Each structure stands twice: as structure tokens, then as C-alpha cells.
Length: 100
Image (cartoon, rainbow, N blue to C red; front, side, top):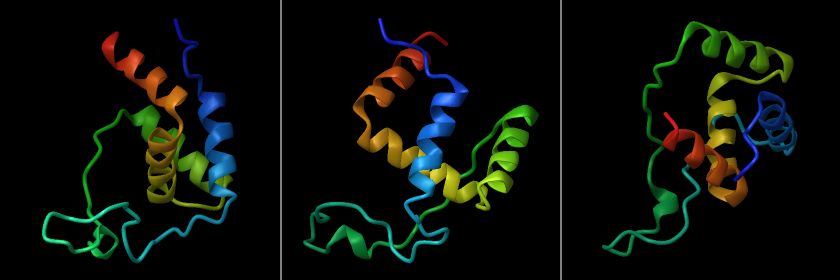
């Protein structure tokens, strides 16, 4: 059984990632590998999507952005980066999703 992810765990991980000077508006998506046609994926344009969240989640992200002198997009990309690179965190999130 894994330890549940707490808000303070996520906050600490996000603070560390944001402090590594992650740009708030990257020019290119930094993906590894190539598409089937041989075009490097790093040349693909950024993509957008909408996240539906509760009022309290939205308020939390906005407060966090102000506290870190950042923005919600940077925080969201940081979370995705953490999920991509931190297997333990990804497993904890997967377990929380399974319990829903």
C-alpha cells in the first residue's frame, strides 16, 4: 500500500520544480523521440486542453500561483512533469484514481 499524496507533498514537489526556472511559456514541447514520419517531436507545437475543477481546486491553484509568482499553466505543466518523471508519485496518483 502506498502513502496517499497530500497537498503539502505536492506543494513541496511543485515548489522545487518551479524553482528550477521552468519557463512559463515554452516555445516547443519537449518530448523525446520522433514521429513515425521521422520529424523530431520537439518541433511539434504546444497543445491546449481544458481542465474542469471544483471552485476550491481553482482557488488553490490560483493561490499557489500567486505565492510562487507563477501562473496556473506553469503549475499544471509542472505537475505533468512530476507525474512523468516521478514513478512513486505516478503510482500514488494511479491508486487514488482507482479508488474513485
